[in-house]
Length: 461
Image (cartoon, rainbow, N blue to C red; front, side):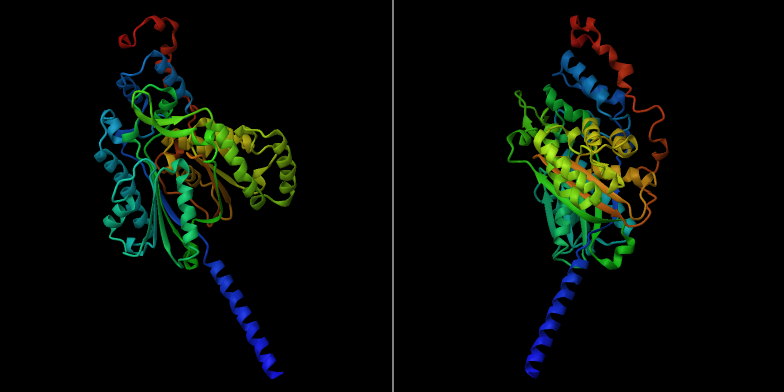
């Protein structure tokens, strides 16, 4: 009998120790953001109306029809007068880009943001355990992660990952890798770097679907520092609660809606088709089916069940219909939408029934910095912080779309009131502009649409 009691007691102690170990492991699997640094290029690289016009006119492959298309696109793009262009494009060398141009552009963004990140946090590069870099269109050898490790003399046992070809949603993919690695490596520091190589991939042809990228994409990027060390929780600004990824690569139409290709004359560029919004709606809908039950309260969940049945019957493929009848504000305080273009922001806004206050950060980030690819979300977050919107306990929903086709969303919890000394600090008081988002191209170049120009040669203009 005594032996039986001893065995029972040992079994209970073992079970208790297992439960304690599981609880401790769960507690150590948090993903906290300590800081982030967005890149802002030198002032002489701003692409105002005159600079954009000069770049467009340098392309001798364009005709009057293409000029009219570009005018219409630029006016409706949502970009302002202060976005930044790649160095070689601003200097007029887009016709013959070199690898040195790609090196210079990426190095400038990566090292500028990392230098500031290490200085702000006091974390030494030698303390970093995990490094994830994502640049979709530039993948040199040695890799960009190796370049960073060499520059900052990081440890030999650092876990380094170099992501390429992931598009505008790559930043959240990198964070997903970090949070998964945090389940294995305890009390670790992780760095994520998100940027893009725009200059060497500036399109120089005349295909309309490929000219769109020149109108939207601009230079930018961001570096972020994460940890799963609970002892540093008091220093964190955000805590990752959920992250969901959807990939529609098996659907041919979705796969081909956003691709890097050569046109019929051999000019390399990025083709954006009309199927993009349809693919975004499909991916977003699938993503929300996982996200909604974890974010919304019971009252909204019941409503969600009804809506899900309706959407199954109607199978709507419009981005505006994704969140029909759902009140996402019941579980989310702020919406950080990828500033990929005005159509994307408008579509998500209508789909989630958001007002202009909710969409303002994404619109202003697009207006001030343009579409900076995977780095775009952090300019939106920076705007919220600079406007002192983010308070302790608030929940932020990040929504991103990328080539493939992918939709990646995540939910953050704000760990303390944020008052923002970031990339917006010198200009935040002027946003939103009092005159609205009027594009100067309307006043300066609307004459391109005059009918009489149909009889004039483009060279005469």
